[in-house]
Length: 406
Image 1 (cartoon, one colour):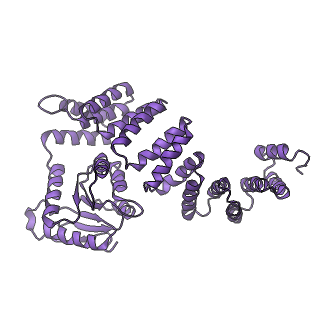
Image 2 (cartoon, rainbow, N blue to C red):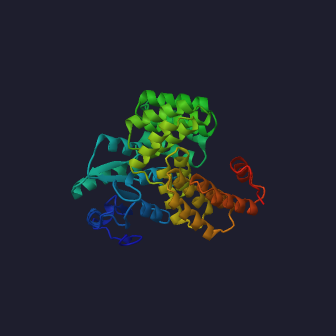
Image 3 (cartoon, rainbow, N blue to C red):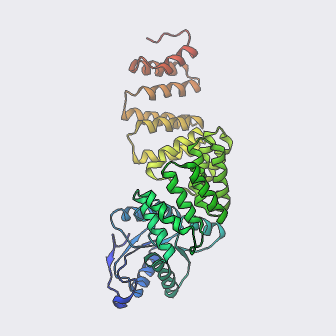
């Protein structure tokens, strides 16, 4: 980031511009693009902070402390791309309605679908002129700051839901289902979300169904219906709605990951592998908090190589976590990477030389290698540290029936 967290610019168009009081965060991994956008924004009269971020990760960190009014963001960036940042923002009460302009070098049907699903306000194709940028920003800012009658009611209901005033939100939304307002999928979807919060899943599902009747491609409703069904243990039906959404918007990697989880829960390991592999292949980046859980999911699905990468990344952030060494060793062992697994366990023992689970796994590893004496020594060490270790005792009893454990 060249000028963290932002620099204040004086409006060159005077105080009449709708841009004058607003701050903007520009997110792009190319310094030249960021510099060009800053110059354009100053020319257009933005008088607030004009901040910069190299990618979505840096942008999200900045936004935790500085509440920018508008975000202009590239799609393709390392670590966290623009679509991932947008989904993160829309799940945050603070930024759920923040104007977000996506800039991209290409506009395909898939990109348009996933951007719309994440509730992007508009997008702009590179290269563009200052006038094009002005038109897009003016359009989305006016819509957010000066919404029409129906849109104002919807935004108010949205805020009420976010602040826990769900019944008040429902009362407002009821107005939008009657003349003179045109029925919209987003209205019925939001009503369904409110009822879901209140625990009325049956009525929520009915409103979701009405939303899809109005707009069969309103993807947020497919997600919501799937969540209702999953909460009721109806995993195959939940998966069906997620797969429908994925058909319309195939670039949503978070949904691919969740589909993999659903398949695992329902016992369909082969299909789970397909979705989970596709998730990483499509470039999904897990957050620090999600990565360890994801690694366990991949290990459970039998995708040991993918699990290895995720566990390794987690260990880089938490190098003293014995559990991570333990699980990484298992992932390596499943790939027949015996030497690497031994090195992993050796590092773990340097952190905690009295960890019985590590010795247990070393015993398993040596047994797989056919080194029976080293295997037995490791199991004895594990049982010395924890005499009541049923898994270790059972393994020795089954595989070393003539050996004493003392």
